[in-house]
Structures are given as C-alpha cells and as structure tokens.
Image 1: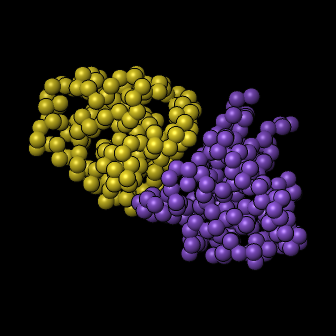
Image 2: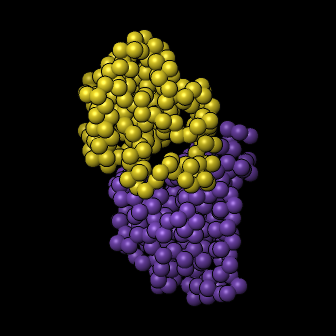
Length: 200
Length: 200
C-alpha cells in the first residue's frame, strides 16, 4: 500500500487542465497515488508576468497551435471537445466554489462538470446558473454551496490558494507536485504520478 | 517500407532541443521514419513577440522550472548535462554551418556535437574554435565548411530557414512537422513520429 500523494493544481479557464482533470483520477488509481485537488487562478500570476490576457491570445502562433493540439489530445483520449466562443472564461465563481468544496468527496465530480461545461458544452462558466448546474450534477444543493463560495469569510480561500501556488513556483496550469518536485503540463501527468515510485 | 518523413526544427541555443537532437535518430529508425534536419533561429521569432531574451530568462519561475525539468529529462534518458554558464548562447555560426551542411550524411553528427558542447561540456558554441572542433568530430575539414558557412552567398540560407519556420507556424523549439501537423516540444517526439502511422 502506498501513501503517496500528488497535488493537482488546476485553473478552470486553462485548456490543458481540461484533459488533466478528466484523466487524473483513473491514472492515479492505477498508480496507487492519492490526489489533492488544488484550484487556483492563473490571472494574477500572468499579471505578475506583465500579461493582461492568456499567452495563447497574446501570441497568436502559440494560440493557433494550442487549439489544434488540444483537439488532438482530446481525440487521443476520447474526450469531447468544442472550442469555447470566449477564451479565457472568467473562472472566479467556479474556483471559489471549488475552494469551499476542497476535501468533499464530490469535489472531483464538480470540477469535471465545470471543465465539460467550458470545453465540451459551450457553456458560460462565469454564470451562477452554470455553476449551479455543475453542483447539481455532483448531487449537491447549489444554493448552499454558492452562498458559501461567495461569503466574505470564504473569499480569501482562493487568494490563499493562488498565493500558495506562486510560493510553490507554479507559473502555469495544470501543474503537479510530488514531494518537492514540480511538473508542468498535461503531458506530464504520468511522469508526476510515477515520480514517488522511482524515487522512494 | 514506409517513406514517411518528419521535419525536425531545432535551434542550437534551445534547451529542450538538446535531448530531442540526441534521441531522434534512434526513435525515427524504430518508427521507420526519415528525418529532415532543419536548423533555424528562435531569436528573430522571439523578437517578433516582443521578447529581447529567452522567455526562460524573462520569466524566472518558468526558467527555474525548466532547468530542473531539463535535468530530470536528461537523467531519464541517460544524457550528460551541465547547465551552461551563458544562456542562451549565440548560435548564429553553428546554425549557419548546419545550413550549408543540410543533406550531408555527417550533418546529424555535427548537430549532436554542438548540442553536447553547449549542454554537456560547458563550451562556447559561438566561437569558431568550438564549431571547428564539432566539424572535426564529424570527420570534416573545419576550414572549408566554416568558410562556406560564412560566405556572403550562403548567409541567406539561415534567414530563409527561419522565414520558413515562421510560415509553418513554428514559435518554439524543438518543433516537428509531419505532413500538415505541427508538434512542439521534446516530449512530443514519439507522438510526431507516430502521426503518419495513425493517420495514413
């Protein structure tokens, strides 16, 4: 029995976080690793680098590549994909909701529902209606959790998560942390999950 | 018998191009794919994006991660690695030499020698002495090839290569092109080599 854990840092607006969120649970089970689901915001980190938009918008060649590559990744893993009309979407409410749901057994279901809404269903994930629908799909009472997410005493949770991400050296999403080791990008899931086995 | 070919676009200053250059020939042989070695310069492309330095220097968190990650990648693949004192190194002379050597059977040996000089041996790859030593290690007469590389009528070759890279949508290195498909990053070699098989 392994007690290894991997931190999975995700941003709901981040394109490559989508396949990571959809795939990580099954991969982690096979690897015998527990996942800590860690929501955060990339916006403040990008602003700290002088970017007022996603680098995929600021650098068109990079963005053009990313959309085609994401489509290939989703095809490869059998994930539905529809390019969102708006990118990046405002992920504040969904991320605040994920913060108050941290540690709840249904939190991964909620996270996956938001990602599907964003990258497969063309929904506006900044709207309370979409977040409520995703809470319902995780069999939760939307009103209670939405109120908790937006309560003044809970709004700081997301800021603290984002500060933690910066302190951990995170600069993009998805990111994975195994012990002291940081891995960046969906294509590093397997390597991150294997790290603790290779270095006991 | 397959006649599939993969374009391998590399920049001698690019960190992740190093493991790609060292690994691609054996992987391509196993995959039954021929490699077209395509040198280019990232500097003009980065300048077009408003960067006057490597993004790994401009964005320190990203740079910190990259050096640790490159070390892991090299360990994983059994490649020697020593972080260069200067990064990025000036790759102009080495890239011009690779341009005049395109199509020569010894060109991959020369390319690997330059990458070893940069990322394993702490050598200054901008110096004619280093480039000459790399030509000699590929069993070539350095003086002849260095003269050819710097001849006015050949200097445009590298500019044309870099223009081609931009026209192909390339924005970083290493990049791989299979048919119309662009793949970016050392961790996509296997996927790029497999592309033509999966989509005949």
